[in-house]
Length: 316
Image 1 (cartoon, one colour):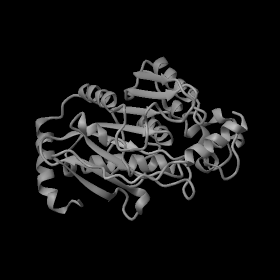
Image 2: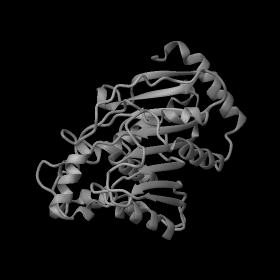
Image 3: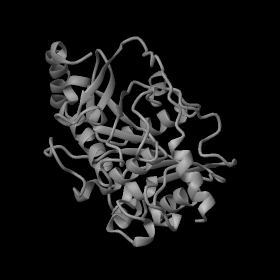
Image 4: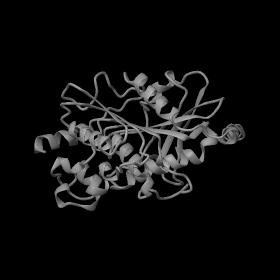
């Protein structure tokens, strides 16, 4: 990759607008904001949960923000528009930045958040057998890496290790995959900060951070829905094509949808807490979750009872 495109990558990933949103919820939903998923971890290891106040446990969709692994925030949660389409639980996750914690801290944090939410499923009316990830740009990279590496246990550290980080579906909005495709990086840029070394120095993190290296034919990997512009100057569409092709070659489920245009986004996509793709994404999660066997009635009753008992001690 030439230096002009590399600089576009660096600038584009950092140029995330600071948007303040009311994040209004449909009737029958409430929220728990700033929930620590790692004890004493600070604001970068907190999450927000938006969940129904009554009824049976629901499938969980976790939003993973972008920002070059060294910027961005869980707020606004761009997955909130799904609540107008389907009864889900939505979570939005912060993770540590590479300015202080290089790879694999970010994917370790995402896995910790997944395990925390499963361990506390009763408190938020979550069906822990139905969990999906939806990421944008660097967040999509983390979503793919977490989902495809979950069976290895490689990035599981900290608490709730009795819970699996496995998920049942992934939506990937223009995420980078094999960072070696960039060719080189320079000291202090987001790629070097993430890897802990320049690309051309060939660090072990280059292979370890590549989601394609965890794809196994015949495995129970989750289905992927991938979207990307064909002329994206920051994360070239070849990243998504490589992931899609590798999944298909392994006999796994992947849908790649491409759009014309030369920007690092999708048509009509902003940073608001809803997207023009909410109906399609909700349908993908709905179908993927429906393919998962129903939990036993005892598990479902336990989740509902646990939620009722814990309402007085949840942060709202």
